[in-house]
Length: 140
Image (cartoon, rainbow, N blue to C red):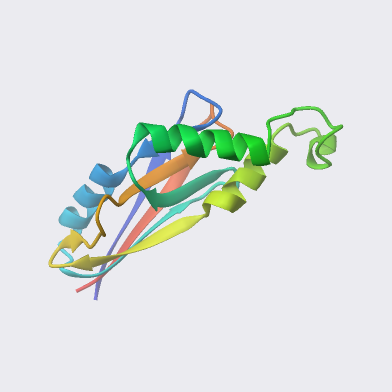
């Protein structure tokens, strides 16, 4: 069995945004030489996410609004107990829980085996600082 491990770093200039990382992950799969296996992609920070969905701007706007409605940004300690610890990002932790930590995609014949329209995204919910994503590819 072969494997490849890579750490990607993102520094998103907005507090919340989504970055399509599919081309980068596809390039790593190609670089690995693995023809049949699995590709794990996971955010290594508790205020960031990795998820699969469609790369459509209206959908991304809908996600941002939905997340903001469910867990609005409020840096005060009046709304969120977590912010009483000196932090201001309780909402970002909740948004990450909703959007998920990681994805696993099958590799078939040397390519990510996606369904129609599927793409991999890095989701940032407490931006303006560098964060890492792990890409681990294993197989034959």
